[in-house]
Image (tube, one colour):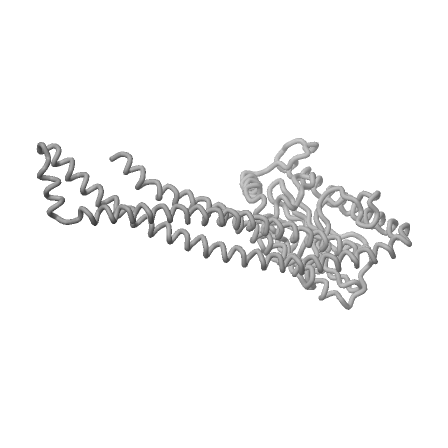
Amino acid sequence: MTKHKHIFKLPLFTFLLFTALLFSQNNKQQQLENRRQELRREIQKINELQAENKSKEKSQLSLIEDFNYKISVLNNLIKVTNQQANHLTREINSNQKKISSLREELKQLKADYAAMIVKSYKSKNTQSRVMFLLSSNDFKQAYKRLQYIKQYTNHQKQQGESIKNKTLELQEINTSLLKQKDDKKKLIADNRITQKSLESAREQHQDLMKSIKSNINKYTAQIRSKQREANKIDREIEKIIKAAIVRSNKKAGKSATSTSFALTAEEKILASNFIANKGKLPWPVEKGYVKVRYGKQPSPINKSLIITSNGVRIATEKGAKVRAVFNGEVLEIAKAKNVRPWVLIRHGNYITTYKNLAKVYVKKGDKVSTKQIIGEVYTNNYNGETILSFLVSKESITQNPSSWIYKM
Protein backbone atom coordinates (compact mmCIF):
# COMPACT_ATOMS: atom_id res chain seq x y z
CA MET A 1 0.00 0.00 0.00
CA THR A 2 2.87 2.37 0.82
CA LYS A 3 4.46 1.57 -2.54
CA HIS A 4 1.29 2.65 -4.37
CA LYS A 5 1.16 5.92 -2.42
CA HIS A 6 4.63 6.84 -3.72
CA ILE A 7 3.53 5.97 -7.26
CA PHE A 8 0.54 8.34 -6.96
CA LYS A 9 2.60 11.23 -5.48
CA LEU A 10 5.44 11.15 -8.02
CA PRO A 11 3.54 12.79 -10.94
CA LEU A 12 2.47 15.65 -8.62
CA PHE A 13 6.06 16.16 -7.43
CA THR A 14 7.33 16.18 -11.04
CA PHE A 15 4.63 18.68 -12.03
CA LEU A 16 5.48 21.00 -9.11
CA LEU A 17 9.20 20.80 -9.92
CA PHE A 18 8.50 21.56 -13.59
CA THR A 19 6.27 24.51 -12.60
CA ALA A 20 8.96 25.94 -10.28
CA LEU A 21 11.65 25.64 -12.96
CA LEU A 22 9.35 27.18 -15.57
CA PHE A 23 8.58 30.12 -13.25
CA SER A 24 12.31 30.67 -12.59
CA GLN A 25 13.12 30.61 -16.33
CA ASN A 26 10.23 32.92 -17.19
CA ASN A 27 11.27 35.32 -14.41
CA LYS A 28 14.87 35.50 -15.73
CA GLN A 29 13.61 35.91 -19.28
CA GLN A 30 11.25 38.72 -18.19
CA GLN A 31 14.09 40.55 -16.38
CA LEU A 32 16.21 40.43 -19.55
CA GLU A 33 13.26 41.57 -21.69
CA ASN A 34 12.56 44.49 -19.31
CA ARG A 35 16.21 45.57 -19.50
CA ARG A 36 16.19 45.24 -23.31
CA GLN A 37 13.10 47.46 -23.57
CA GLU A 38 14.72 50.05 -21.26
CA LEU A 39 17.76 50.22 -23.55
CA ARG A 40 15.53 50.47 -26.63
CA ARG A 41 13.69 53.41 -25.03
CA GLU A 42 17.07 54.98 -24.20
CA ILE A 43 18.16 54.76 -27.85
CA GLN A 44 14.80 56.18 -28.92
CA LYS A 45 15.37 59.18 -26.61
CA ILE A 46 18.86 59.73 -28.06
CA ASN A 47 17.53 59.55 -31.64
CA GLU A 48 14.65 61.93 -30.85
CA LEU A 49 16.96 64.51 -29.28
CA GLN A 50 19.44 64.19 -32.14
CA ALA A 51 16.63 64.68 -34.68
CA GLU A 52 15.36 67.69 -32.72
CA ASN A 53 18.80 69.35 -32.92
CA LYS A 54 19.64 68.21 -36.45
CA SER A 55 19.54 71.74 -37.89
CA LYS A 56 21.95 73.03 -35.23
CA GLU A 57 25.73 73.02 -35.52
CA LYS A 58 26.98 71.08 -32.52
CA SER A 59 30.60 71.27 -31.37
CA GLN A 60 32.85 68.34 -32.24
CA LEU A 61 33.27 67.61 -28.54
CA SER A 62 29.50 67.47 -27.98
CA LEU A 63 29.03 65.18 -30.97
CA ILE A 64 31.74 62.85 -29.70
CA GLU A 65 29.98 62.70 -26.31
CA ASP A 66 26.70 61.87 -28.09
CA PHE A 67 28.26 59.08 -30.14
CA ASN A 68 30.18 57.68 -27.17
CA TYR A 69 26.96 57.39 -25.22
CA LYS A 70 24.98 56.00 -28.15
CA ILE A 71 27.69 53.38 -28.87
CA SER A 72 27.69 52.41 -25.18
CA VAL A 73 23.89 51.92 -25.12
CA LEU A 74 23.91 50.00 -28.44
CA ASN A 75 26.66 47.71 -27.12
CA ASN A 76 24.62 47.08 -23.97
CA LEU A 77 21.51 46.38 -26.06
CA ILE A 78 23.40 43.82 -28.17
CA LYS A 79 24.85 42.25 -25.01
CA VAL A 80 21.44 41.95 -23.30
CA THR A 81 19.78 40.64 -26.49
CA ASN A 82 22.53 38.00 -26.80
CA GLN A 83 22.00 37.02 -23.16
CA GLN A 84 18.28 36.70 -23.87
CA ALA A 85 18.89 34.60 -27.00
CA ASN A 86 21.38 32.37 -25.13
CA HIS A 87 18.90 31.96 -22.28
CA LEU A 88 16.22 30.96 -24.80
CA THR A 89 18.64 28.47 -26.39
CA ARG A 90 19.17 26.84 -22.99
CA GLU A 91 15.40 26.78 -22.40
CA ILE A 92 14.79 25.28 -25.87
CA ASN A 93 17.40 22.54 -25.25
CA SER A 94 15.95 21.88 -21.81
CA ASN A 95 12.41 21.65 -23.19
CA GLN A 96 13.51 19.32 -25.99
CA LYS A 97 15.03 17.00 -23.38
CA LYS A 98 11.83 17.22 -21.30
CA ILE A 99 9.75 16.36 -24.37
CA SER A 100 11.89 13.27 -25.08
CA SER A 101 11.69 12.22 -21.43
CA LEU A 102 7.93 12.79 -21.24
CA ARG A 103 7.34 10.79 -24.43
CA GLU A 104 9.21 7.84 -22.92
CA GLU A 105 7.26 8.16 -19.66
CA LEU A 106 3.98 8.42 -21.58
CA LYS A 107 4.87 5.37 -23.65
CA GLN A 108 5.59 3.33 -20.50
CA LEU A 109 2.45 4.59 -18.73
CA LYS A 110 0.29 3.64 -21.70
CA ALA A 111 1.89 0.18 -21.88
CA ASP A 112 1.32 -0.38 -18.15
CA TYR A 113 -2.23 0.90 -18.44
CA ALA A 114 -2.96 -1.40 -21.39
CA ALA A 115 -1.63 -4.41 -19.46
CA MET A 116 -3.75 -3.43 -16.47
CA ILE A 117 -6.88 -3.12 -18.63
CA VAL A 118 -6.27 -6.59 -20.14
CA LYS A 119 -5.80 -8.10 -16.68
CA SER A 120 -8.87 -6.26 -15.41
CA TYR A 121 -10.93 -7.46 -18.37
CA LYS A 122 -10.09 -11.10 -17.64
CA SER A 123 -11.34 -10.80 -14.09
CA LYS A 124 -13.89 -8.05 -14.51
CA ASN A 125 -17.15 -9.99 -14.05
CA THR A 126 -18.90 -9.63 -10.71
CA GLN A 127 -19.00 -13.41 -10.19
CA SER A 128 -15.15 -13.61 -10.31
CA ARG A 129 -14.82 -10.86 -7.72
CA VAL A 130 -17.46 -12.47 -5.44
CA MET A 131 -15.74 -15.85 -5.72
CA PHE A 132 -12.38 -14.17 -4.95
CA LEU A 133 -13.90 -12.77 -1.72
CA LEU A 134 -15.86 -15.95 -0.77
CA SER A 135 -12.79 -18.15 -1.15
CA SER A 136 -11.10 -16.29 1.71
CA ASN A 137 -10.04 -18.41 4.70
CA ASP A 138 -11.40 -15.93 7.23
CA PHE A 139 -12.97 -12.46 7.61
CA LYS A 140 -9.56 -10.75 7.94
CA GLN A 141 -8.39 -12.17 4.60
CA ALA A 142 -11.73 -11.24 2.95
CA TYR A 143 -11.36 -7.66 4.21
CA LYS A 144 -7.80 -7.42 2.86
CA ARG A 145 -8.97 -8.78 -0.52
CA LEU A 146 -11.78 -6.20 -0.62
CA GLN A 147 -9.26 -3.43 0.11
CA TYR A 148 -7.01 -4.78 -2.64
CA ILE A 149 -9.87 -4.67 -5.17
CA LYS A 150 -10.61 -1.02 -4.21
CA GLN A 151 -6.94 -0.11 -4.32
CA TYR A 152 -6.48 -1.76 -7.71
CA THR A 153 -9.50 0.12 -9.10
CA ASN A 154 -8.14 3.43 -7.72
CA HIS A 155 -4.74 2.66 -9.17
CA GLN A 156 -6.34 2.21 -12.60
CA LYS A 157 -7.99 5.63 -12.28
CA GLN A 158 -4.71 7.18 -11.13
CA GLN A 159 -2.88 5.71 -14.11
CA GLY A 160 -5.54 7.11 -16.44
CA GLU A 161 -5.22 10.56 -14.80
CA SER A 162 -1.43 10.35 -14.98
CA ILE A 163 -1.58 9.65 -18.73
CA LYS A 164 -3.97 12.59 -19.18
CA ASN A 165 -1.70 14.96 -17.16
CA LYS A 166 1.46 13.84 -18.94
CA THR A 167 -0.25 14.39 -22.32
CA LEU A 168 -1.31 17.92 -21.30
CA GLU A 169 2.18 18.65 -19.94
CA LEU A 170 3.70 17.47 -23.22
CA GLN A 171 1.32 19.70 -25.20
CA GLU A 172 2.17 22.72 -23.00
CA ILE A 173 5.92 22.21 -23.40
CA ASN A 174 5.52 21.80 -27.16
CA THR A 175 3.56 25.08 -27.32
CA SER A 176 6.18 26.79 -25.14
CA LEU A 177 8.96 25.41 -27.35
CA LEU A 178 7.39 26.79 -30.53
CA LYS A 179 7.02 30.24 -28.91
CA GLN A 180 10.61 30.18 -27.65
CA LYS A 181 11.90 29.36 -31.13
CA ASP A 182 9.83 32.20 -32.59
CA ASP A 183 11.06 34.63 -29.89
CA LYS A 184 14.66 33.65 -30.59
CA LYS A 185 14.23 34.35 -34.32
CA LYS A 186 12.86 37.82 -33.51
CA LEU A 187 15.75 38.55 -31.11
CA ILE A 188 18.31 37.54 -33.74
CA ALA A 189 16.58 39.78 -36.33
CA ASP A 190 16.51 42.70 -33.85
CA ASN A 191 20.20 42.20 -33.08
CA ARG A 192 21.09 42.41 -36.78
CA ILE A 193 19.34 45.80 -36.99
CA THR A 194 21.07 47.00 -33.78
CA GLN A 195 24.44 45.80 -35.11
CA LYS A 196 23.94 47.92 -38.27
CA SER A 197 23.11 50.98 -36.12
CA LEU A 198 26.23 50.33 -34.04
CA GLU A 199 28.44 50.06 -37.13
CA SER A 200 26.99 53.33 -38.48
CA ALA A 201 27.56 55.13 -35.15
CA ARG A 202 31.15 53.80 -34.96
CA GLU A 203 31.91 54.99 -38.51
CA GLN A 204 30.61 58.48 -37.72
CA HIS A 205 32.55 58.45 -34.44
CA GLN A 206 35.79 57.46 -36.27
CA ASP A 207 35.29 60.22 -38.89
CA LEU A 208 34.84 62.79 -36.12
CA MET A 209 37.89 61.53 -34.24
CA LYS A 210 40.01 61.87 -37.41
CA SER A 211 39.10 65.55 -37.76
CA ILE A 212 39.63 66.12 -34.02
CA LYS A 213 43.06 64.45 -33.93
CA SER A 214 44.27 66.81 -36.66
CA ASN A 215 43.72 69.66 -34.18
CA ILE A 216 43.90 67.85 -30.82
CA ASN A 217 45.54 70.74 -28.95
CA LYS A 218 42.62 73.06 -29.71
CA TYR A 219 40.06 70.59 -28.33
CA THR A 220 42.19 69.71 -25.32
CA ALA A 221 42.31 73.44 -24.48
CA GLN A 222 38.49 73.62 -24.78
CA ILE A 223 38.05 70.67 -22.39
CA ARG A 224 40.43 72.20 -19.84
CA SER A 225 38.60 75.52 -20.07
CA LYS A 226 35.23 73.81 -19.47
CA GLN A 227 36.71 71.88 -16.53
CA ARG A 228 37.95 75.14 -14.97
CA GLU A 229 34.47 76.66 -15.34
CA ALA A 230 32.86 73.58 -13.76
CA ASN A 231 35.38 73.58 -10.90
CA LYS A 232 34.68 77.26 -10.24
CA ILE A 233 30.91 76.65 -9.96
CA ASP A 234 31.47 73.57 -7.80
CA ARG A 235 33.59 75.66 -5.41
CA GLU A 236 30.76 78.21 -5.26
CA ILE A 237 28.28 75.42 -4.43
CA GLU A 238 30.58 74.10 -1.71
CA LYS A 239 30.94 77.63 -0.27
CA ILE A 240 27.12 78.09 -0.18
CA ILE A 241 26.63 74.75 1.61
CA LYS A 242 29.38 75.43 4.16
CA ALA A 243 27.89 78.86 4.91
CA ALA A 244 24.48 77.20 5.45
CA ILE A 245 26.10 74.67 7.85
CA VAL A 246 27.63 77.55 9.87
CA ARG A 247 24.24 79.30 10.05
CA SER A 248 22.46 76.13 11.21
CA ASN A 249 25.04 75.55 13.99
CA LYS A 250 24.97 79.19 15.07
CA LYS A 251 21.17 79.08 15.29
CA ALA A 252 21.36 75.87 17.38
CA GLY A 253 24.02 77.41 19.66
CA LYS A 254 26.68 74.92 18.53
CA SER A 255 30.25 75.31 17.32
CA ALA A 256 30.58 77.28 14.10
CA THR A 257 33.53 75.06 13.09
CA SER A 258 31.30 71.98 12.72
CA THR A 259 31.22 70.48 9.21
CA SER A 260 27.73 69.02 9.73
CA PHE A 261 24.30 70.62 9.80
CA ALA A 262 22.70 71.07 13.23
CA LEU A 263 19.39 69.39 12.38
CA THR A 264 16.05 70.10 13.99
CA ALA A 265 13.73 67.15 14.75
CA GLU A 266 11.78 67.91 11.54
CA GLU A 267 15.00 68.06 9.46
CA LYS A 268 16.19 64.74 10.90
CA ILE A 269 12.94 63.09 9.74
CA LEU A 270 13.34 64.71 6.28
CA ALA A 271 16.94 63.44 5.97
CA SER A 272 15.88 59.98 7.13
CA ASN A 273 13.10 59.88 4.49
CA PHE A 274 15.53 61.08 1.83
CA ILE A 275 17.91 58.20 2.69
CA ALA A 276 15.00 55.72 2.75
CA ASN A 277 14.24 56.67 -0.87
CA LYS A 278 17.79 56.11 -2.13
CA GLY A 279 17.62 54.55 -5.59
CA LYS A 280 13.93 55.44 -5.89
CA LEU A 281 14.02 59.23 -6.35
CA PRO A 282 12.45 60.56 -9.57
CA TRP A 283 14.54 62.08 -12.36
CA PRO A 284 14.97 65.88 -12.18
CA VAL A 285 13.57 66.07 -15.75
CA GLU A 286 10.77 63.95 -17.20
CA LYS A 287 12.72 62.89 -20.32
CA GLY A 288 16.43 62.60 -20.93
CA TYR A 289 19.58 60.51 -20.68
CA VAL A 290 22.88 60.87 -18.81
CA LYS A 291 25.50 62.29 -21.14
CA VAL A 292 28.32 62.63 -18.61
CA ARG A 293 28.45 60.49 -15.49
CA TYR A 294 29.74 61.17 -11.99
CA GLY A 295 33.40 60.93 -10.99
CA LYS A 296 36.82 60.99 -12.61
CA GLN A 297 36.86 59.76 -16.21
CA PRO A 298 39.05 60.05 -19.31
CA SER A 299 38.13 62.72 -21.82
CA PRO A 300 36.21 61.31 -24.81
CA ILE A 301 38.74 62.82 -27.25
CA ASN A 302 41.98 62.56 -25.27
CA LYS A 303 42.22 59.53 -22.98
CA SER A 304 45.27 60.91 -21.20
CA LEU A 305 43.24 63.92 -20.05
CA ILE A 306 41.17 63.14 -16.93
CA ILE A 307 38.00 65.16 -16.30
CA THR A 308 36.13 65.34 -13.00
CA SER A 309 32.34 65.49 -12.77
CA ASN A 310 30.81 66.17 -9.35
CA GLY A 311 27.36 65.35 -10.71
CA VAL A 312 25.73 64.16 -13.92
CA ARG A 313 24.93 66.01 -17.12
CA ILE A 314 21.51 65.10 -18.50
CA ALA A 315 20.58 65.76 -22.14
CA THR A 316 16.88 66.60 -22.40
CA GLU A 317 14.35 68.25 -24.73
CA LYS A 318 13.91 71.96 -25.41
CA GLY A 319 11.70 73.66 -22.81
CA ALA A 320 12.16 70.77 -20.36
CA LYS A 321 10.88 71.55 -16.87
CA VAL A 322 13.12 70.89 -13.86
CA ARG A 323 11.59 68.98 -10.94
CA ALA A 324 12.62 68.73 -7.30
CA VAL A 325 13.57 65.11 -6.69
CA PHE A 326 12.33 65.19 -3.07
CA ASN A 327 10.60 67.34 -0.46
CA GLY A 328 12.82 70.10 0.90
CA GLU A 329 13.55 73.81 1.22
CA VAL A 330 15.18 76.06 -1.37
CA LEU A 331 18.59 76.84 0.15
CA GLU A 332 19.81 79.25 -2.50
CA ILE A 333 19.25 80.61 -6.01
CA ALA A 334 22.82 81.24 -7.20
CA LYS A 335 24.21 83.13 -10.18
CA ALA A 336 27.66 83.87 -11.55
CA LYS A 337 29.07 85.91 -14.41
CA ASN A 338 28.46 84.29 -17.82
CA VAL A 339 26.85 81.26 -16.12
CA ARG A 340 23.17 80.32 -16.07
CA PRO A 341 21.54 80.30 -12.59
CA TRP A 342 21.37 77.21 -10.40
CA VAL A 343 19.11 76.13 -7.53
CA LEU A 344 20.12 74.34 -4.32
CA ILE A 345 17.43 72.44 -2.37
CA ARG A 346 18.10 71.20 1.15
CA HIS A 347 16.69 67.86 2.39
CA GLY A 348 17.89 67.82 6.02
CA ASN A 349 21.66 67.35 5.71
CA TYR A 350 21.43 66.42 2.00
CA ILE A 351 21.52 68.94 -0.86
CA THR A 352 20.41 68.55 -4.48
CA THR A 353 21.66 71.10 -7.03
CA TYR A 354 20.10 71.90 -10.42
CA LYS A 355 22.43 73.83 -12.80
CA ASN A 356 22.06 75.56 -16.19
CA LEU A 357 18.54 76.92 -15.81
CA ALA A 358 16.81 79.35 -18.21
CA LYS A 359 13.99 80.13 -15.76
CA VAL A 360 13.59 79.72 -12.01
CA TYR A 361 10.09 79.38 -10.52
CA VAL A 362 11.01 79.31 -6.82
CA LYS A 363 12.77 81.61 -4.37
CA LYS A 364 15.07 81.14 -1.42
CA GLY A 365 13.26 79.70 1.62
CA ASP A 366 10.39 78.14 -0.38
CA LYS A 367 9.19 74.71 0.71
CA VAL A 368 9.05 72.35 -2.27
CA SER A 369 7.58 68.88 -2.74
CA THR A 370 8.66 65.86 -4.78
CA LYS A 371 8.29 66.46 -8.56
CA GLN A 372 7.37 70.13 -8.04
CA ILE A 373 8.44 72.25 -11.04
CA ILE A 374 11.23 74.58 -9.89
CA GLY A 375 12.44 75.91 -13.25
CA GLU A 376 13.23 75.29 -16.89
CA VAL A 377 16.45 73.98 -18.48
CA TYR A 378 18.42 76.39 -20.64
CA THR A 379 18.70 75.58 -24.36
CA ASN A 380 21.84 76.72 -26.16
CA ASN A 381 20.61 78.63 -29.23
CA TYR A 382 23.83 77.93 -31.11
CA ASN A 383 23.96 74.14 -30.88
CA GLY A 384 20.39 73.37 -29.76
CA GLU A 385 21.58 71.43 -26.70
CA THR A 386 19.45 71.37 -23.56
CA ILE A 387 21.65 70.12 -20.72
CA LEU A 388 20.83 69.95 -17.01
CA SER A 389 23.68 69.44 -14.55
CA PHE A 390 22.44 67.67 -11.43
CA LEU A 391 24.33 67.11 -8.16
CA VAL A 392 23.64 65.33 -4.85
CA SER A 393 25.66 66.17 -1.71
CA LYS A 394 25.73 65.04 1.89
CA GLU A 395 26.77 68.19 3.75
CA SER A 396 29.40 69.48 1.26
CA ILE A 397 30.59 66.02 0.11
CA THR A 398 29.29 65.08 -3.34
CA GLN A 399 27.53 61.75 -3.97
CA ASN A 400 26.92 59.75 -7.13
CA PRO A 401 23.41 60.80 -8.36
CA SER A 402 23.02 57.43 -10.13
CA SER A 403 22.88 55.77 -6.69
CA TRP A 404 19.92 57.96 -5.72
CA ILE A 405 17.83 58.37 -8.86
CA TYR A 406 15.61 55.54 -10.08
CA LYS A 407 17.28 53.57 -12.89
CA MET A 408 19.88 56.26 -13.61
